[in-house]
Image 1 (cartoon, rainbow, N blue to C red):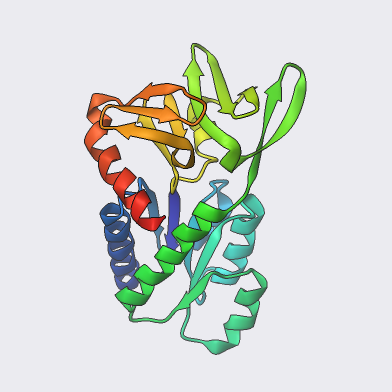
Image 2 (cartoon, helix red, strand yellow):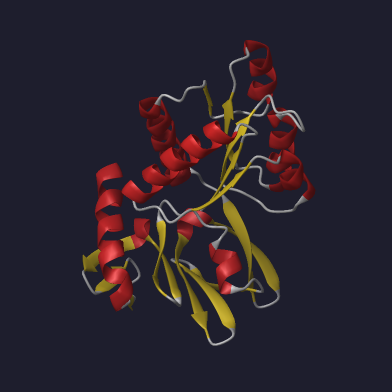
Length: 232
């Protein structure tokens, strides 16, 4: 999961980054947080994000304009806006902002907002494109059982068949929600919604496939699995 925090106030940036990192760590979500005081550099780049926290009023570039660009790159991005100015709220609503925060941050409200964001990612029914022979197929993300690297080929397995993608293993997995997909082995990215049995060292998927959990992943996945069960 990639999270952007953009605020030209260094103290606010540091505090919000700290709280978001603590939330992700305590809930066992693997996340890369990009924290910057420079919205222009984000606008000039091409990177996509799953979640963004944007200060609306910044000297170089307002958060509304930056949010519009980020939503073009990823229409499913979850946008949180930070503002003390009510006149900006209508513009933020046009971007389907997930929630608004005022400074100083209320940590309880922040964590509640992130809880809702994770629930949204769990329920979201998005799709990706993959190939079967010479045809492109639209696959709903929640239909994916697991993604695996088989030599040079990246294969996507569903209950209805298998598909391939020209994306690298890492690039394809980046498209999938980290709230219910997990890298249990360097070559297996599994959908927790389709696990029928779990033992500490092995998973059984709903199609009967058994997948080993890599020894160095076992403890972290065990924690992630029980956090997933708590949410469901």
